[in-house]
Image (cartoon, rainbow, N blue to C red; front, side, top):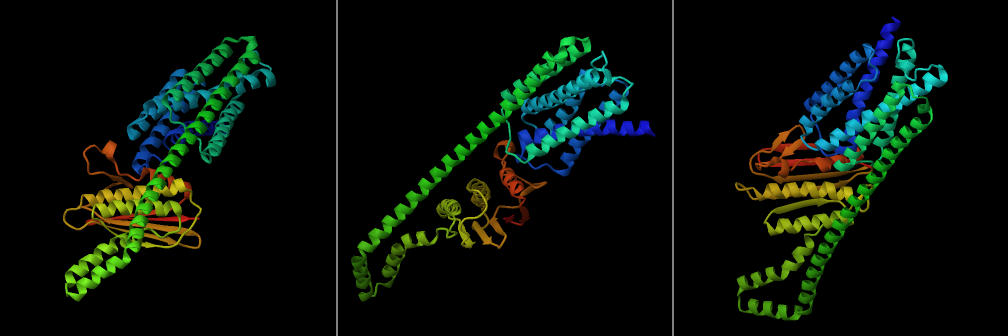
Length: 434
């Protein structure tokens, strides 16, 4: 009975280790990039299960450290993830190698410390032997649980690395560190207790420090790019308002002359000319009436910009917008969601042939949330695949109109999304809980 318990602990540590490797890849590389279907997730976790089972069998045979098994684990899980994701080979492989190497390095250091300091054995890898199954399996499980705790901390942060050369270099360094430590422990070098252990831990700390610093650097660079884009949009919006204001100023200045012309048309019963003249005078006013009234600077800026595009493309826009003011959603996230939804709607409307294109947008403020709904006309029916909206263009990899970036924001705010597609209509409804 005790043997069965030890085996379950060993299997649990293998499943936890391989499962966490996938979690770290998703966090460091793919967070928010793509929402996977249940089938796709199933294939990935099937690969995790297979790798865990093989690792368990390998350790049951007494091979608690095996480079061949480690390579097989990486190949199985890496291949499954690459088949599903179909991109970022170097980054994915780098994270896998780095993850397994660091976990194994920490494990070897703990095993060496317990074998030499607590058990007093000359063999620095004595814990891997058959005399201490309870201690060995407990160490394996506790280390994996500690790594799981680290993952939980990282999951709540903005740490994200997507630099292939950086990840590749870090993975090579981590692997050499692990291999160097094991070889010296296996050969029984005495000085490994101090010098080599310090070197191994220093390498791990260096790798993690570089990754964190680079993550913060790339995150700041992305934020700077978003701010620059926002400034450009604000400048364009200001120019548009200035032009409208100039037209109205000119209209007010010449109001007396305009009235005289209208009076002359009416006196001579030239009603059609008078009507057409009045329509021309109203054009600047109509432009002002079309601007968004939400009271939120970033929302109004985006809506005004997209409404101008819609007007130019002869797309009818209907808006029902509350005065929402400032809300608990960052400008960058609002820009991401609203711009993506409206860009998709505009693109769909541009392809309409059988009907006049239209867009309906609703923004409603609740006591504890915000409702955002965008509906639009479209030609035919949309192509839907597991919450991912695919383009009708031939090159889908480059021209996908999926909601990947929107999904990232929704996940961040734990928001709900509902998407409906009917005959020549498309609707997206989002609820933010603030």
